[in-house]
Every structure is written in structure tokens, then in C-alpha cells.
Amino acid sequence: MAHDLHANSAAGGAWKRNAAICVVAAALLAVPALLGSFAVSLFNLVGIYAITTLGLTLLTGSGGVTSFAQAAFMGVGAYTSTYFSLRLGLDPWLGLLAALALTGLCAAIMGAVTLHLGGHYLPITTLAWAVALFMVFGNLTAVGGHSGIGDIPPITVFGFALDRPHKAFYLVWGVLILTLFGAANLLSSRQGRAISALRGGAALAESLGINAFRLRLVLFLLAAELACVAGWMFAHTQSFISPTSFDLNQGMQILLMSVLGGVGNILGALAGAAAVTFGKNAIQDLVPMLGLNAGTFEIVIFGIAFILIIHKAPKGLSPVLGRFLPAAPRPPLGKGGADGLHFTRTAAPGGTEVLLQVKNLQKRYGGLVAVDDVSFEVRPATIHAIIGPNGAGKSTTFDLISGMQAPTSGTVHFNGRQITGTPARGLIARGLSRTFQHVRIRPNHSLLENVMMGAHWRMRTGFAAGILRLDRKEERAFAGIAHAALRDVGLDADPHAKAGNLALGPQRLLEIARALASDPRMVILDEPAAGLRAQEKQALAALLRRMREAGVTILLIEHDMDFVMGLADRIVVLEFGRLLATGTPDEIRSNERVQAAYLGEDV
Ligand SMILES: Nc1ncnc2c1ncn2[C@@H]1O[C@H](COP(=O)(O)OP(=O)(O)OP(=O)(O)O)[C@@H](O)[C@H]1O
Image 1: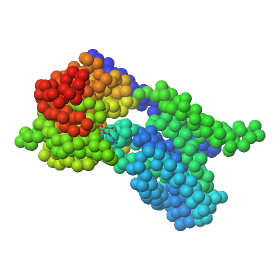
Image 2 (image 1 turned 180 degrees about the vertical axis):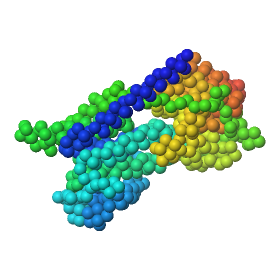
Image 3 (image 1 turned 30 degrees about the horizontal axis):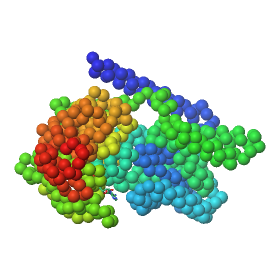
């Protein structure tokens, strides 16, 4: 019955959504028939800026990288194609190809130099890029220099010249609608989940097997190319361009469009572009009536709007859009996994007797030795705990095993192969999955989507297939696997619920489900019981035992002695970076050196 209700409401939601799309499409088709040239031209500008802003939505909103250079990349598209068509007499479509190539080259060089530096390097470089390009455009006398250049020929489609705003409207809005659908498809695909994992920090993305640098570079390129296409349409629909059309002020306005629309909201890109473009037009109409300079006023008003939005409404228009738009249809849960997860790589029969071998591991930070000559082994299908007082070197040991840091000396072997210094992203495919001390989930994504991130390395869909929605079969299969993982940790009641609504205990379980979806040999857990209530700890211990029975090996750091003593098969005790003792819980409990180290604590 509940299932039927859910199916009915989903069908109702889809119906409303499709109806809303039809109404909007009909209204759009009527725009050129109902409005005059100036108004249609404004609509075209909205479409052009929405395409540019959409690039920023993907880059900043989803990937967490800020850029001031979108207007400058529009300029590269506009000026390259103008030069090709006006000076070389070539078709604007050839100009577009050249512009895309040049934009790609510039963005690739800029991204390659700055993206791995992290922090504010990229935003600052994009600022410098915007200023430098303004100078370059101004000094290109072949395309008009600072005074700009006119008579740019229109785009032709099958011999039909788009020489009036009414004709260009269909191209601009057609391209916009295609890019909106493409972006929506991308964000709901494997690569879209990888992009949002980036927002959880490079550590999360890399732990899932995602090359954070490469993904940021692809996003930066994609955003630049979208701006280039928009710039190309700008030049050939306005027929006049000048450096001020693509200066830093324009770059800031595009950032304002993105922030106003709600960073990360796809339709927000359109709403933000419309609000700023129509707002700018209203300022230019009204302010001169008061005897004031519209240009100066525009900068002041937009500056104030920027500050107000950041402080008072950081989500921009997206809550409003969310209220009026019917919810997106929920993806199917997929088949398979009805009887729980099947691990294909656990307890490798015939494999090595030791799954993880840590030998003489050392990590120095200048004069401080955080981990000093530590050696231990973990056998398959066991629960192994690392304990020790604060500052004993537990987290550093974890980081050395999980590839977050490289050791100063010593080796780590996993499943018979040396993994010393292997970057974190290379480990999940070998069967090593991890959770974090400070939970790293994507709060605005569903439980199902969060868990599917764990299966990223097992999936194949690339950017193009995601944008074209050719990934449905794979999505269904892995939604089934993620659903089974949620069932394994007891979170399958509402797989489509937002992960951010969960309390801390269930969030920790969600991270474990994400690790299970990666088909792990071994899961390493950083203080999994921290902050949990007694009942939640019992449920967690039961889950970890079930995982052990299924053949998954577990290595954990934990401060809660009762939890560790009642659960672990073997325990490693560290003190001042050195191995103090190793053994079963009983051996550790009766070890005098451990008792001395934990003086006053009940071991
Ligand atoms: N990046 C770093 N640079 C310098 N010193 C560090 C760094 N990371 C850790 N340390 C030092 O190394 C030692 C071991 O730290 P680590 O975090 O591994 O201990 P821990 O046992 O996990 O402690 P806790 O239980 O408090 O998390 C500490 O003295 C810490 O200050």
C-alpha cells in the first residue's frame, strides 16, 4: 500500500513537472511573436548570460572553485570569431571552432598552473586574467581596439541568416535549453556526484578514487567553453563588441547572476541572469530621469546587492525557485541486492594470510617523530583496533596507510602488494575504503546518492555519456547496490531522504554504507563511535561484527575503551609514536606497560 502511495505521488510529481515544462516552453515560443525587437534582444542577452552563468554554477556551485574570468572567456569567443568572420571572411561557425580551441588552450594552461595550488590562487589568477585580457582586446587594432568593432555578420543556419533578434532568439534559447538539460543530466550522473564530492573537500573525493585536480580542470574547461559559446553568440547577435563588454565589471556581474540565482542551482543560472539583465535595463531607464549617471549607479547598486545576498540570502533565489517548481522525479532504486550486499573480494581465499602489513613505519615532521618504527599485521576478516593516548600517532598512522600522507620511511603492503606512498585515490580500487573522524557526507544529496559515491570507481560513465543520459542502465544497477548497502546498515527506510537531515549516529552509518558500496576488502574507520549514544554504539558494534562475518576486514581508531575491548580481535597500542603493545583485548588489558600508559583510565 505504502509502495502504491509512493508510486502515485511520484507519478503526480512527474505529471506536474512535465506540465510546467510545457507551459514554460509555450510561453517561450510566444516571446518573439508578442514582443518588439528591443525586448526580444533583452531576452537574447538573458539567454547568453544564462549560458555563461551556468558554467559558473557548475564550477563554483558544484565544484567549489570561484572564477572571475567568465566574461573574459566570453571575450575570447567573441573576438576570435569576429576576427575570423570580419577579417578573414570565414563563416561564424568556423570562428566558433577556432574560438573553442583557443579558449580550451587558455583555460587548460591557466588551470594546469593554478588548480593544484588550491586556496585562493585560482580566483586571483582569474582576476589577473580578466584584467590582462581587457588590455589585450583594447590593443587589438585589427578588431577595433578600445573603441570596439561593429558590422559583425550574423550566424547563418542552413543558409538562413539570424540577422534580427527575433530570429536569433531560437538559436540562443535552443542552445540554453540544451545546456540546461545537459547540466541537469550531468549533475545527476556519476560525474555529477564526483563534482559534488569535491565540495566535501579533496580528501573525500580522493578517498573515493576521484582525481580532484583533473576533475577541477575539466570543470574549469567546461565553464570556459560555455562562456566562449555565449561570447560567440553575443558578438554575432549584437553585431558590435568592445573590450568593456567583457571587462572585470562584467565578470563581477556574472558572479552576481550566479550568486543571486543560488550558487549550484541550475535554473538559478537563468533566474540570476534574467534578474540582473532586466535590473540593469531598469537602472539605465530610470536613473537618468533623476539626472544621475546610470553607469555609476549600476556599480553601486550591484555592489550593495552582492553584499546583501552573501550576508542575508546566501542561497539566493533557489529557495523561491524550489517553492514554485515541482520536485525532480526520484531516480529508480534499481534491481538487485534484495538479499543484501555481496562482497566479491573479501577474505580472498588462496590469497595472502596477512591482508595489511605495516613495517617499520616512520613519519617525521621536522624534529618531531609522529610515528616511530611502527610494525603490525592485520589478518583478513578480523577487527583490528589502534588505540593510544592523545598525540600517540594514531591518526598519522591511519593517514600513512590510507595514502593521505607519504611516510618518511617504512613500508605498507596490502593484499600482497606494496602500497607505500600510493595516493589515496589509488587505494579504493585495491579494496581499501575509509570513513572520516569528522563525517564527510554531502548533506544536500540523498542517502542513495551519497552511497553511490562509494561505487564511483566501479562505474564507467564519463562526462559525455552523463550529459547525454546514456548511463541509465549503469545507474539502475548501482542504485540497487547502494540500496542494498543502505539496507545493510539499517538506513533503507527512505533512501531518497536528504543526508543532511540525519543525526550524527546515522551519518556515521551512512559513511560505512558508502564504504560498503565500494566492494571493499578492508574498511578503515576513524573514531566511528565518537559522539554516538550508548544504543547507537551497540548498533554500530553489531554492524561491524556482521561485516566481519561477511569477510570484510576492519581497522579502526577508537578512544572508547569499552567499545574496543568488547569488539576487536586484536589491538595495537601506540604511545609517543611508538608501538607499546599488540595483542588480544585480554592481553592488552593485563599488559603492565599499557596500564601504566593509561594510568587512571580503566583498560
Ligand atoms: N602535519 C603535522 N605537522 C606537525 N606535527 C604533526 C602533524 N600531524 C600530527 N602532528 C603531531 O604528531 C603527533 C601525533 O599526532 P596524531 O594526530 O597522529 O596523534 P593521535 O594519536 O591521532 O592523537 P588524537 O587522539 O588526539 O587524535 C602529535 O604530536 C601531533 O601534534
